[in-house]
Every structure is written in C-alpha cells, then in structure tokens.
Length: 76
Image (cartoon, rainbow, N blue to C red):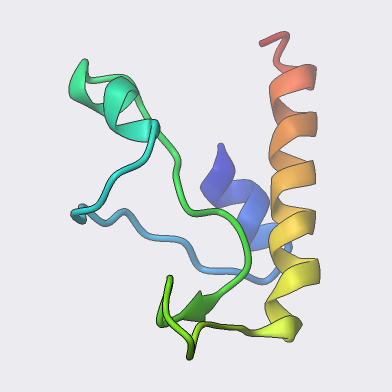
C-alpha cells in the first residue's frame, strides 16, 4: 500500500533489511509488515556532518499522506 502511494509521488520504494535501533524492530520481530524510515532523505546521521536533502521533503510527505488516505479508504 505504501509502495503504491509512494509511486504516485514519483518515488520508487524497495524493501531493505538493515541494522540499527527503532521501535519498528518490535513489530518486525513478530512478523508484522513494518515500514520505517519514510522521512526525508539524508545522511551521516548523528554526526556534525548530518544533512537533509530538502528536495525530498515534499515527495516523502505526499507519499505518507497518500498512504494514510489509502488506509482510511480501506477502513483500516
């Protein structure tokens, strides 16, 4: 559902397993479909060189809004 919503915003989303620590690990650990890291694109997290790609803000926000609307229309 999120992939389709993201595609409407011009984004190509693929699944990826990665290390790290987030609350999404709890739902993923029990096998529930889990989405994490849907915010803006950036890099060098938690360092003095951390950055954000401003151009990614609007498409990422649009994708999330569209996904929420899809959930609502599906009655979820």
